Image (cartoon, rainbow, N blue to C red; front, side, top):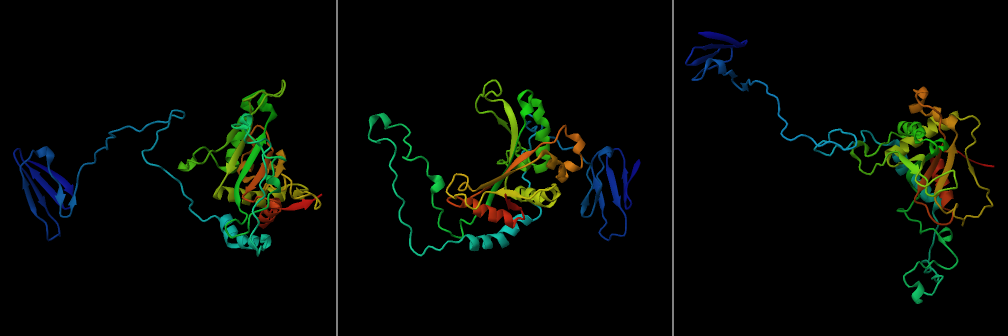
Length: 332
């Protein structure tokens, strides 16, 4: 005869050929269970609760591993979402968008005339130029194109921010790019397909497009770049305006061209505003400032604000957009 104390209100008695489990307690629904089994496999049961021994879950099919990193790949798509609304995006859609619509609106009561047909440089009926590239006469005219009709759908907006940095020392040794890659990853928080986002390319390596004498060869790594979109873009802009630009010594702002400069130039119609930061500005980013000694050198960068503006005077609309985000501008 053997006895076990299963729980505080459970008493079990077993002999060789049958097991008797007696449930005692204040519960009025206590009952007596008689089951024919061995003494080693006694059943412990209470009303509304079954006590079973824990067993390890067996993995029937092992997870696939990444060929480059060797890490296991989950069988589900893990995608990280934003846990809080983006302040920069809310500021644009709630405030700036209406103001920019008012500032850049051009009233056109009559419909526009159809664009003038520009003849090609060569005769399209000539057999020699039948299947060849036939550019328009007078060169590219996209810089002199009239901006589209102003509507609520094409208000100037920020599409992406691109950071670019060239390191001349990487031409002799590509390992000199590691410091710049680490700095860009810390500043932007971007890496390839981070958080399950397939469109995130992370920090990319820029390679030479053509050979230049004995100094540069085609395909040699010469720099790094990263594209920021969505909330990451507005987060970087907030860091730039709040922490970096105010701490630059004698920084007047982004220099604008003269008021007399024409607006129908490729620079004025590109819809892109670019400026550079010196290497001394890298330590002002909070992500770098906490462990600035971990980086072998300081790296300067070029910042490009790319928008959807196009046509004559597109850059003026972009400057108005960036001024709404407190980015300073000045004239020489």
